[in-house]
Image 1 (cartoon, rainbow, N blue to C red):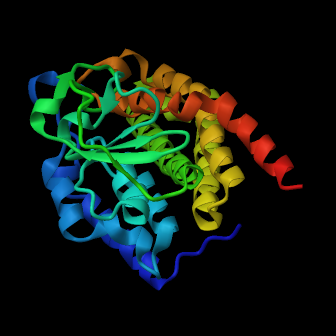
Image 2 (cartoon, rainbow, N blue to C red):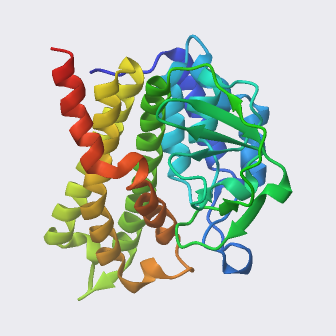
Length: 306
């Protein structure tokens, strides 16, 4: 695949990157040392400027939505972008956002639920949605650098979504691949900055060849995951979507290990943002049954087409 953004996509992503340089998108310690920093101003800025609707714009499309999700996930703040930009425009455009997504069990902690205005349930044979009210949600503490919550009631007004469940799951795989790859990219950039600045034996850590090789390996895996994600968004095929998500889920184990090793203990403290990216990626690593299931699906979907 060759992906050169068209004029509108290039402008769209350029404006997004300018917004990402704003104070609302930057690193700061969260209130009361929370493990995530929900940026309501940045979320509002994106919504008011129509960024979450790009997937259904003819000259932008799902590729722009995936590229945007990747970039937003590389920020140290938490913003609900994946479901809002990839699922909502295609399948439930009237659903209020932010959106929480239930993949398997409604009784498990759900990311973004405390901030969500609605919830999507991705069943194997049906897709449904419900509007949330504050009384239906109980926030819970979590290591995973997302706002997490529990549904206190199953008695919501669930409405069916008229969409093919398989197509919705494929779109969600693309969204998750973009978000997870962006999280790894944010962590890598933070570590590269650290090894450039930190000196040992009178030299920057980044000047040691062993570190350079392993960081180059991590960068290669992340870059490959990014292009697989854009390919899946461009072709919107089930095998491509499963390949993009399965690849980044499998690659994340080694990437996360190396990032924390090069950062040292600082990467686990709340004074540095690395834990936000790597712990988000740890949670997403198990999404839609994890790497083994998604990579097995690639084979099954490709052979079934023969």
